[in-house]
Image (tube, rainbow, N blue to C red; front, side, top):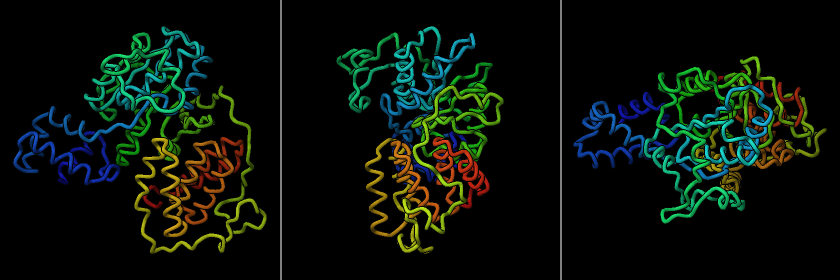
Length: 410
C-alpha cells in the first residue's frame, strides 16, 4: 500500500492523511477487484502500465461536495471587480478544481446578473477527474446541486428535463471544461493570465511540497492585481507564501503580495465593528478587557497529555462545506467532554468569522491562542480578521507571529 500512496502523492499531490488512509485502501481494494488484479504489488505495477486505471483510481478517490452559489461572497467580490476593470482584453477566470461545474457556472451567472456582457469574460474550468469534467460538460444537475433559500436563479437559468435541470446554453458557453492536473508542469502553459482564480478545497489535500508547487503556479497564472479565492482552511497557507488579504468580507479572497499590483483594492472594506488590541497575544492578563474573560480560572485547564481532537479533520471539512451548525456541535461536544481545546476554539472562531460575527470570532481566536500561543492557523485567521476590521497594527503583529512559526511546530 505504501507504494500506491507514494504513486498518488507523486501524481496528484495527495496527502493520505487528508482523506484518511482507510478511504484510500477501500478505493484500492475496489479497483483491484474490478481490474482482476491478484495482489497489491501487481496492482501497483498496473498503475504504471495503464494511465486509464490510474485515472479510474483517482476518480474513485475524488468525491466532490459542491452546489450552486456555495460561497456567494466570493462570486460577488469577483463581479464587483469585473465592473471596475478597464484593461481592453477579455476578462479571464480560472476554476480549479471545477468538480461537476457548479462553481464556474455560479460565477458566470453572477457576472451576467451584474451586467457584465457575455463577450467580455470567459471561464476556464479544470479538474483532475475526467468523470467530473464529463458531468460538467453535460450541464445537467439534480436536486443536490440546488441548496439554500434563494432559488430564483434556477427559474431564470435552468430548464427542467427528464434527466434533471439543464443549464441554459447562454451560461454554459461562458465556461470551458477540461481535464487537467494543476501539478502537471505542462498544464496551464501559455501567455494567458487570469483576473481571478478560484482554488477552493484543493490545497488542503496536498502534501507540503505539492502545496508549494501549486501556490507558485497559481501565482504565475494570476494577474498582478488579480484575486485568488480559497476555502477558509487554506487562508493560512497563502499568508505563508506571500499572499495578502483583499479585505473582502466573507470572500476569503487574496492578492499576491509579491506582485506590484497587489495594493489595488477597489472593493470597499467593511467598517470596523470591534476594536482589536494591538497588544501581543496571548492575553495572560485580562483585567482591562472585561468583555473577553480569559482569566486562567475562567477556562478549563488544558493538559499536555490530552489526546488530539479526533474529529478535527471532519470538523474542518464540514466548515469548508459551510455546515457551520454541525461544526459548532462537534467542537462544543469536545469542549464539554474534555475541556478547553485550542483546535476547538479555533474552529468555532472560524465559523463565527465566516458568519460575520466578528466580535465573537475575535473572542474565540483569543481563547485558542491563550491555550496554544503557537497555533499558526489561529494567528493567521485572527490576522485576517484584524485587517478586515481596519486594525492594521494588530493584523501586522499577528501575521508576523504566524510567519515565524515553522510548519511542523504547530
